Amino acid sequence: MTATSASPGPVLDRTDPIPDIDLVDPDPARMATHDRVFAELRPEHPVFWHGPKSRPGFWAVIRYAETRQVYRDSASYSATHGMTLDSLRTEQDPASGMMVEVTDPPEHRRLRRGIGAFFADGVVADLAPMVDAYVRELLVGVRDRGEPVDFVEAVAARIPTYAAGMLLGLPPEDLEWITSRTSRVFLSDTTSDAPATLRDEAEQANGELLGYFAKLLRTARRGSGAESLVQRMVAGTDSRDSLTIGEAILNALNLAIGGTTTTRSLLTNLVHALTRFPDVFQALRAEPEAVPLAVEEAVRWANPVRHLARVASRDVELAGRRIRAGEPVVVWPRSANRDEAVFASPDTFDIHRHPNPHIGFAAGTHSCPGTGLGRAQMRATLSHALDLFSACEAAGPAELMQSNFLHGYARLPVRFTPA
Ligand code: HEM
Image (tube, rainbow, N blue to C red):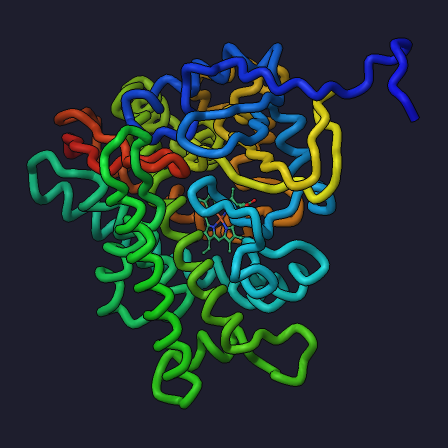
């Protein structure tokens, strides 16, 4: 079949509309401009070829409708090559077929059922009171210190490891070590000529965590601890859905990293937003019943996930662009969550936004199974902060984490005024 002039058809347009910008460069000052850049590009370039100098090019998807389409169409957009630009490879990820995040259907369904016990009805309800008590204890500690704190170190880094530790049944004495490693796994190097030290650190932290879970689960297998984690993952070895010990190790790692890094960043983004918009904090104090809607708005407005990578597994058309099999397709959910075609006044942090069909927990095959636990941590933090403090304000410059994958703060000095 030949293309005719009667129908425009998909175009093979590889003109990069932002040739002077590198979306993969994690330099905090440059990344801070991305939300504005995306806003300018969305109307004319919902899907565009981006060829940064730092690495091979990829299709960038920045509008809500197409982001949703990529998430939902696993047959066309495969997750098996890695989920971040730093880990993306031409060949399949070595964990593909074993770890949920980098596995496509139909195998993905078996793995998702394999970790299903952690997300069964009632699990979050059982954990929530403990998470709630832990969060309150941390925030009371902040109040009693009576001086500004680094919110990351004092609160945001601790809550998700505690929650993931409770979920997975991890030894409490290991949580601090786990926090120190998970805080590094998504660091990325700037694209300047500086030596690639942060990526090395990130890979080392990932390797150490993998070693940790391998040891924990193998030991548990012999019946000397952490049995419940293994039992819940490899229960019923005769069942079609049970995981092998290798799969259990990789998915425990996936849960620990997926559950902590995102939530930590989101908590920092929420509190950073509260320091920027004191009226939001006061509005919530006057109306604490708006907390659940405010949490959803935080997942939209302050979303921590900058991008997620897929690779086209066949020739496809997206927003009139022709994408060839084998080409990377990268969605930018923070941009989709500010798509003016879906969200009125998208730049406003609106604690009453409803409905709020944000795509901060993804959609389709890989949609986040940890939404309940994530929301519980956010609600507890916000509710106790509103109860214990009458104001919160910046107590020094906030420092963004150097990561092209996660948007979150590495340092966030905050002064909380006791209520
Ligand atoms: C509140 C903060 C959270 C946010 C913003 C978030 C966001 C996401 C997103 C966007 C994905 C999709 C990844 C993709 O499409 O490639 C995802 C997947 C996942 N998340 Fe979350 N997440 C959060 C909390 C959690 C928690 C608390 C857990 C577990 C305890 C968790 C576990 C996972 C897992 C295992 C996957 C992979 C699912 C699959 O591939 O089928 N997340 N998350």
